Length: 612
Ligand code: ADP
Ligand code: ZN
Image (tube, rainbow, N blue to C red):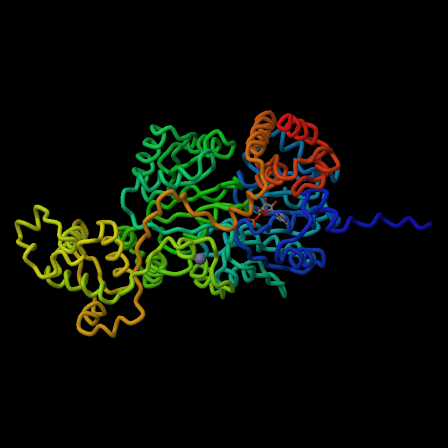
């Protein structure tokens, strides 16, 4: 008999054994085929789309050591913990590690113990000098995976100069295939990645950017505390992020929520490193449910069961929005993304950007797109994917405020628009939205009385409407480019040229839409998306909670975040199937062989205890 080497396990086996997954998501097969075939590739999938497994699984099939380049130490550590918990021989090397740990990893490398090694980009050049040559001489590299590859591009939202060093590695490893992964979809970033990494005849795979499990809502800003509370009430005991525009607002809201009894921490760049780290850790280890944060809280948040993301203020572009809201529901389960917005947000962005000399035409255009999204009346999923250049195949998504019937379109938007525009005109374009609103609603405020504005013909035209509703219409007219605000401290409303044209000739406004929030029907709870109803179908909620407790206990004992033990999707499946034997347990989604062996008995005993 010839001594043929054992055939590597096929991918499907690796998937089932290490991850407990039985099917592939879109483009995963193609991405892994490229790696197995040694062809350079670029995979673009939204956050949570399942990119990591596309380089992790092939590393177990191909001989040698896969190098994974990853920008953040926290991200790296998390992924390695998750892999090790699944029985995958993986390690990382970074400057934050203790000398002992580092020596242990080096020894492991020498013995060929690992299939995946995570390194920071700065490790592969400069610092540590001969380290890389040592590594390359010691281990045979199967392939190189570059995670968060958009960090190499100026056009991305997170440029990191050290990523430019990776091009040098490519030159040192001409025979080895390189594979890039990112969630940033723009063509310019994609092009940049291919050029900077020197990818050759790369297989380019770009997935759909729709996230069907996310429920998008947009609310005109009214009372922010009440609005945030309403979202939190739908997510008791669940994880979420509330983004605020400034540090001051973060601190105030976090303190207030803590006073209301929520388990919450603040996060922003003004906190000490120590506090920031502690707060992030508390969130990842489920010691708290909510983080109130500025956008400084972002990459490296790998908690997969974030069930809601609230924006208390609009981001500066839809790219930013997609990125930040996209931190919800990475486990594929339902999650809610609420954007609370007012026209003041956009004024502020223009002010900030122009103060820094950054209010370029491009930035203006990005802001306008964000503004228009917020004021649009139509399916949010369709809008978002359309923005990223993708056609939306479904008629309705079942997961946005519009498709769930929460918005009420005005039956006669043109007349409504003209009423508001003429009020602005009659007031000489010298008053802010609050005063215009009072006049339209027929509210005799101090200012209305002293100026005699209650005698204007436009006084009380919208007597039936609430303050929030009128504010909402005004914001929408701004977003549609019919009104504009100017002046910093006390912005006044003025007609744009288009707005003036609509006043002269109603037909100019054909196709205009205006909407308000529909009043909640009595006795009816918040609407749920289809995804939410489906993912809870047949799930024993109290068993799910008991399993969450078990998971938390095990995670604490082992000093890892809970989602490293099991994802929520797996807990729900367990609480649906209620397996009674180890064998049945092994067939549950997300339970690999290693997990069944390691944790099976504990899981079964919780299930039995619940049934008793
Ligand atoms: P990304 O890196 O694209 O943000 P991840 O690789 O973190 O996404 O994957 C998101 C989640 O989906 C992870 O929990 C991952 O284990 C899970 N996942 C990936 N592929 C599959 C699959 N084929 N079937 C089920 N779950 C999967
Ligand atoms: Zn929709």
